[in-house]
Structures are given as C-alpha cells and as structure tokens.
Image 1 (cartoon, rainbow, N blue to C red):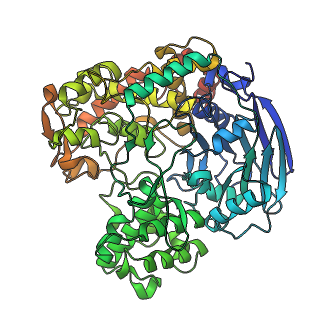
Image 2 (image 1 turned 135 degrees about the horizontal axis):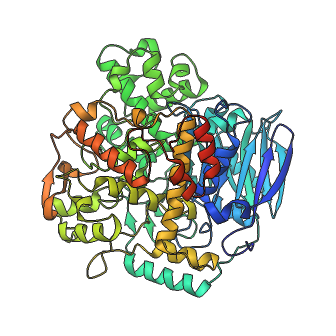
Image 3 (image 1 turned 180 degrees about the horizontal axis):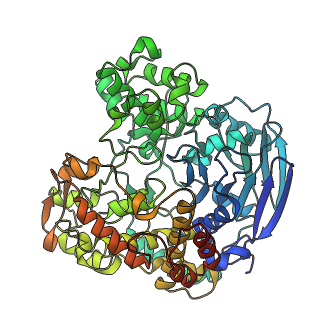
Length: 639
C-alpha cells in the first residue's frame, strides 16, 4: 500500500508503562479492514482478552482515522475505540469525533495511535512529523480540558491540534470524556481510561498531506455532492441557535451547520452545537422564563471538566425524579435540586460529581449505576437509556427496524437509527405536519427505500415486514462509512432537496473510496467490508459475555408500555402503507413479532437462527477464520 492514496502508511503504538513507542505498517490491516472502525475493531479483537478490564493498564485505547480523513469532502471524522467503563456491562465501545484532530494526526504521519500501559507520572504525547515523544504533564494535571488544550497550543504553537481530558477523567468519573480542537467531544468514558493511564493529552502536528490516487475524480464527486446537497447548510433542527452565533465547521466540511461558535460578554467563547448545549435549553428556559446564555455556560463547564453531557442529562432526570418522589433531598445531596435549570444547580452538581464529594462519588458511576446504588432504579424505568445511560430517541415502538439496531450495538447508534426518516426524523416530520416546501413525502420515501434499504416495506411502519433487511442494509452501509471515516450528519446522502426525484445516490461512498485508493471498489464490495466488521464486533461482544438470542433483548417496557411521544418525530407520525401518514402513538413493540424479526435478521446474516450465534461457514466466507476458531473453542459459534 502506498503511503499516499489516502493513508499516512503507519500506525503508532505507545507503551506508557515503558515510555516507548514503535510503528507498524497500516497495510497490515488496510486491505481487509480498510480503516477507522474496521482497523480499530480488529486491533481490539487482537489486543483485548476477555479478562482485561477497562481501567487496567493493558486495556488499549485506539485513536484511528480512515482513508477519507483529511482528504475527502466531509472526511472530517476520527474515532476512538476501547473498553468503556461507562457501559453496562463494561466492554467494547467507540466514540465518533469531528473537528480537525484526526486530519492532523494523519498530517503528522500516522493513521492511528494505539495506547497501552500506565505512565509513572502525568504525561502527554506529542506527535509531530513522524516522530513521537512522551512528555511530562505534571503541571497540567488538575487543569481543565479546554485550559490544557490552550496551554499546550501556547507552548507548542497554534499549529498543533490537542485532545485533552479534564479533572473528571483524572478522578475516574466513569463517563468522563475528552475534548479536542473545535471542541469536538468524545464520550463512552474514554476520558476515564486516559486518566487511569495518566495520559492528560495528545498533541499532533505535521506538514505531510496524503493525496488521493485520482484527484480529478474526487473533485468531480465533490461537485456532485454539492449539487445534491445544495448551498443551504444542513441545520440541526433541535438547537436554538443564538442570533450572534457564528458558523463553524470541521476540517474539510462542505456545508453542515451542526457547528456554531459563540462568544458572550465575559469573553467566554467556544462551540455551541447539537446536544452539547441543547440538553440544558428547555430546563434553563423554564427556570429563567426566557432564553439566556446559561446553556452555553453549562456546555463550557462540562467541556472543561471533561464530562459527557448526555450522561449529565440523565443524571439531572434522576435527581429531579428522585426529589419529586421524596427519595432524594437537597439537604442530603448538598445540590439545589429545586433550581434545576439554573447555573447554580449545574455548578454545584458538576463540582460535587467531578471531585467525587458526597453523593458525587455515587453519581460519578454514571446515572444507571448511581440509581442502582441509591436503590432508586425505578426512577429511570421507561426512560429510553442506552448502555451508557444516555437518553435516546427514535424508539423501536416508533421505527420498528431500530429495535434490531439497539440490540446489536454497544451503544446508541444515532447515525443508524436516524437514517431512514432523514436527519433524525425531522425532514419527514416537516412533510407529515404540513410544513410548506417539505419534499420528503411518502412517494419519495418509497423511492429512497427501493434504492437504499431493500424495498418499500422498509418505510411502511404499519408492518414488521422488511425491517430485518432494512436493519442489515443500514448497518452494513453505516459500518462501511465508519471505516472510511465519513461524517455521520452528511452521509449517506439518501435524499436531495435539489433534484427532480429527491432521491440521493448510494454509490457516492464507494466511488469516493475508489478515487482515494486508486482501485475500483463497487457498492457491494464496500458493504461487504461493513458486513465483515459487523461480524467481528458480534464476535467481540459474544466473547465479552453476550449469549446470542438470549441476550438480544430490549427493555421490557418497549413491549408493555404504549408509546406516548418521541422528541424528534413530531406526533409520532411515520410513513405507512403506500406512503400514507400514520401515527405510532399508543403502540407497543409486539414481543413475538420482534422474535420473528430477529430470526429473519439472523438468517440474512448467515447466522444460526435458533441461537443467534455466528456460523463458522459465514465467518470463513468473510475472511475471519481465526475468529471462527476462537469462538468455536468457546462454544460461541455454530458449524
């Protein structure tokens, strides 16, 4: 594999315990696993035994790019893979980040960094122009993530890109995250893993720019994407953007408006985007009676402390419900729960949690574990929480195919559950509720389904038919995109406001990869790589305690409690037969039909239907014969 054609050509392995680094060729993995999710998942399989725990020194963190990172349009993304201490149960997980850090890692000469061990003292890693150095970070320990990032840029030059943890990661808050340039944030508790390794930050810089094999073809593809997407940015429909906010973009962005930046009167500035600020908007408005800058201030606090705002949102729900039920009090917690929505409430909550003082030591375990420890788990019953304790949307009772996504993923996979209704369901909701100019109507949805998801039944939510095939196709396409790595908000381009039929193009990703690596890759070829990674991830999760069909279960309330609302799809309105607008409000997820869906899904995957376990034959067909052998030795595969 050439060093250009999308790759830097090397992976950097860091042993913090020994203070040593080494490199290996990316080509050891790229042919079969491509990049991003594929390479990282394979490294995880090879490096993480079933007895390793998330905060053990030998538990690796994999920081990885893909061939599109820093090269292709909207190739902004980079991933982190490892064992998540925040997951329930603890185990394999991932985080998807934007900004510019990933591109600059590639410019520094590496496609990925794999970190093992535990440094004897607080340290940071500097990677510049193909060289790596572990440096002392004692003076940075205890400082905020944003503060650390700024300090290292002042010391090393503004050209470096920095990913850092805050006090939450240092103190072992299980849902601690990390913050990189552009305020790109990573969740899944990887900040706590970095803290356990005494790795405060990683700074990357370089002058090398890997080139695609066919620049003219990539340029033409970019032009096509712009014709499909138009000049209007894809605006986040949830966030209330202040009028003085400025448009902000990730590296190589071509038109997203998910990211805006803001500066308030006291000089505080930074990202104001997506869930990071939106999670506190409604309660702040309710508390103050008007729109204020408090959600932005809260976001900046969370980023600097280095905590995952989605877990914080569930923690607030837990405290609010606990107080309402008389099970949690202000006097016992020292937290002004009656002032939820205020800046004072969040400042107090974060200080206690990050310092692990009083109840903060329990809340640092994450909202689900905290509820169990406090004996109030019932307060979160009926909440749509994933294995990280995040409140999620696009309920399986609403979009039937998402039930299969939920049971197959180690965490809530927004890009997979939101794919079919267009940007979290908002484009379809515009049409279903009569918004002028809305174009994603029933006929368009059916045309898109024929081209992307295996047939029209994928978008008929009056029936369970066709949902297993849709789930498989959504997964394979999504995993392939995560190998490239592509922006989750922009890809796949399923719909277009600016074409006559409003149908997107499912071949863009494979043609992009072909232009980057200089070798023809068809749509089916790319999706087969995605299928390989789905199977490898399944093997990991089985090795970490999964039991196949027996553990492929949804929380019981999906089968027993009628759906009341979904915060992204207005009035629970979805497409029905022949594209008619129907409502799923009041529906449950039929238990037997879910079992039937699972059987169909397993069969489509070539797995053993009664057990839900992979078959040796299918794993061998996908080039995973060594994985098949290990699963067989553990009784986790079928002939």
